[in-house]
Amino acid sequence: MDIPGSEIRIKSKAIQDWIKVNNESAKAGATGGSSGTKGTQGSEHIALSSQAKDIQKAHEVVKKTADIRVDKVERIKAEIAEGRFHVDSYELAEKILKDVITESKFLG
Image 1 (cartoon, one colour):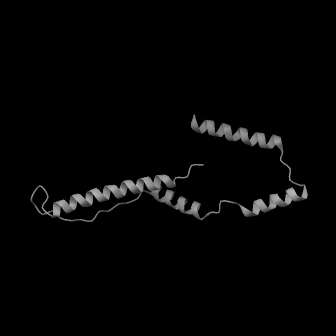
Image 2 (cartoon, helix red, strand yellow; image 1 turned 60 degrees about the horizontal axis):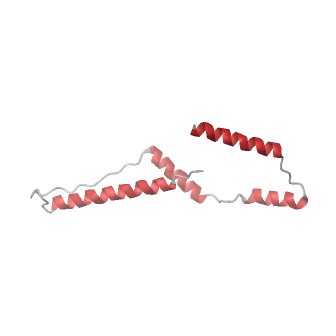
């Protein structure tokens, strides 16, 4: 599974660099710069797209979600201890093949 958290950091770093460059050029303009005229300092406004906001929300949910489904693990442990846990090899093979086919359609 690909988690988009790293994309957010990269975009954030790019935005920070962009703001830094623009702030430095605005300061140079305000102090006279190469043109010799006094520049006006305005505020920068950055708006995130709805997709970026959705990615950010998804990232927050993933961070809050437990990595292990404790209830399921406990149920399986109990079934193993009682000798009731059984894996149907045909069902498992079918699910693996479905995943392989789905991924190949997605990538191809």
